[in-house]
Image 1 (cartoon, rainbow, N blue to C red):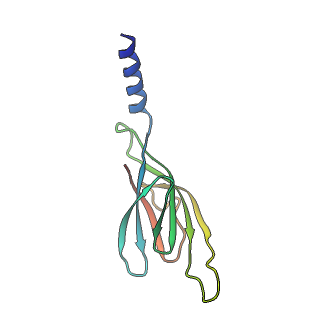
Image 2: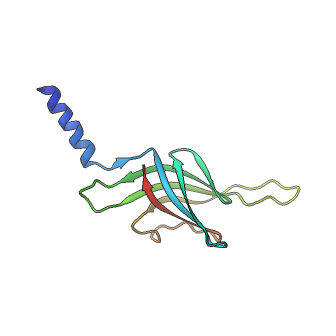
Image 3: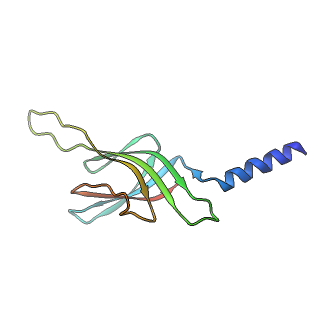
Length: 121
């Protein structure tokens, strides 16, 4: 009986709270060519998006009974090509939450790339 109640409580808490995922899906748009591509990021690992290096730190999805929302916390670094005889500098250009429902609310500001949140898996 107690096991059943504990199992039901755990299931209820998991269902009510936001879902934390192991992978985040973002879409990268190359503004020069106009091509968009989806990238699946493993939480905590860097992924190349053109000259950018994107690291997803967290990905949450709202509960099914709530208004749909996907939130991805990312760190974005720019790795421009190095000039001959120089070392390339890695510069952080963005860190924060991306919201699928409002891609322009907290946008990555880069002259070549747009990035926005798509899904958590």
